[in-house]
Picture 1: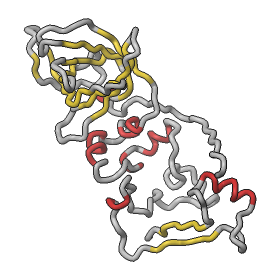
Picture 2 (picture 1 turned 45 degrees about the vertical axis):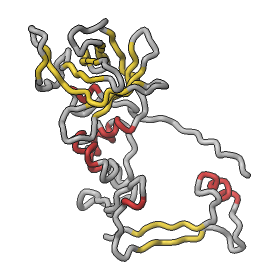
Picture 3 (picture 1 turned 30 degrees about the horizontal axis):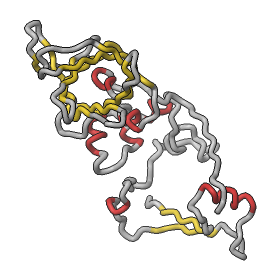
Picture 4 (picture 1 turned 180 degrees about the vertical axis):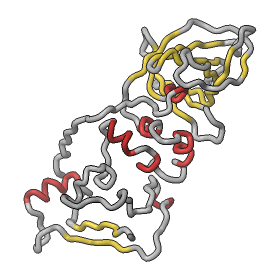
Length: 261
């Protein structure tokens, strides 16, 4: 068996950009509680109900708060629904029951990268010590979702298809240093010397699914097949090296779907 390939990479751009719309969207991300090793992440739930989050503690027990909803606390201590005001801190309280326990947790943003969290063992009658948590920059697919024009719609639609470049503003992704395919990068790198007559268009209407059986089947599709090996079935030295990064073992046959224009 051949040796495993050694891959080197360089991280460019902003790996942990701020949520596009701000407000409660800034809750989304990874957090660490000050003075401890308690780390948790928050993300939006895929549900018809707006403004609902899920909190997961990143530990061996993987405790969660499945339904983290917004509440406001009046001077009398009563909780009621309230609207989110973008850029106002401290933000709204978000509260939920820790799965498998009778404990409740509530949290609120103190700033873009800082939140406060408290716990209650008596259904919210009294709350424990106020603890602060700091945002941790991390690489996560959720960052891309929060850059979408409409994050909640994007999350809900991901049950049907993967997040698409069209769900986000390409200029925003470009400004953050994220990768854009050549046809969307507006750098005119595909056809030097030619002027665009219109905006670039993606010709493939297919949507990637983790389960290929869920992908739509095109009528009478065309495929381009190319054999890149030698006549005797061997590979040249360069191709032999590259084949370690392709399907293993690589037989030299490349197949690409031809999009319909």
